[in-house]
Image (cartoon, rainbow, N blue to C red; front, top):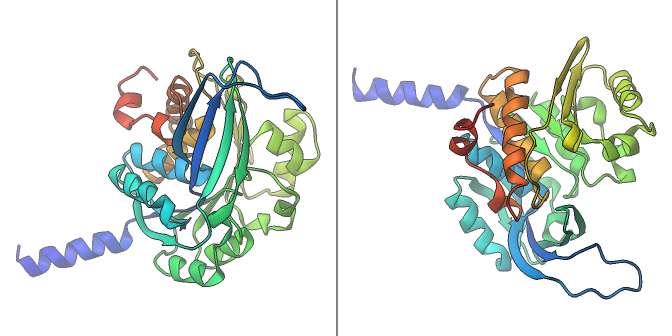
Length: 311
């Protein structure tokens, strides 16, 4: 085989290879360990303080990369967040679509109590400076069949969804944190919704799990619905398909990043043409490992850690 033919084949493989784009947030997480969450009027001394790389978008990109799949992260940081960009590159996240802006890097203040539960305050900062020009330029590098993942920690979600659908990309949407603005997004264009019970309640106005899922399936009949239920596991449904994946029992240390780990591993495995059942199981196992560790992105396991355990 000639060198020219090898190059031709390589270029065509790259041309048809499906790519994953995560247009998402990048945060610095300030984590405080407390016996209980701070109450109104109360001052509490923290047991410890740590700084981590986080943001729902960032965490999900790290999870995809640690699952062994290439992911392109698009988002904004300030110069104070350049260390995050460097770390993402060390974790094999493609950072060519991360822009440096003047607005401060987004950050989160996270309380973690003795039960491993968390309470989070976020400041959008640079995450809220996504421009429509940036969206156009970024999406120009992607094509029909590529995946795009979105959360609700950046601005201009609606035009990203609309423009991605124009390119016939597969759209995954995690409406977290849930806000009233989500109802104004073109949600009928979303291919997969990934929600927890609280987000499902706010999205549909329903209270119990079955009613939430029924309302979502009725409203978005062409979308796959993935509802994460913490210790109760996860449910996937679309049309007549209904799959339940139990949670793996572990000793919980910190739930920060568990949902993002699940989403990243789920999307990564779907991109590798795994079945829904397999993707749910591997993603659930990965999330169960994450909650046994402290932190956001740093707590996400590599695929070798997940694959080496009994699923």
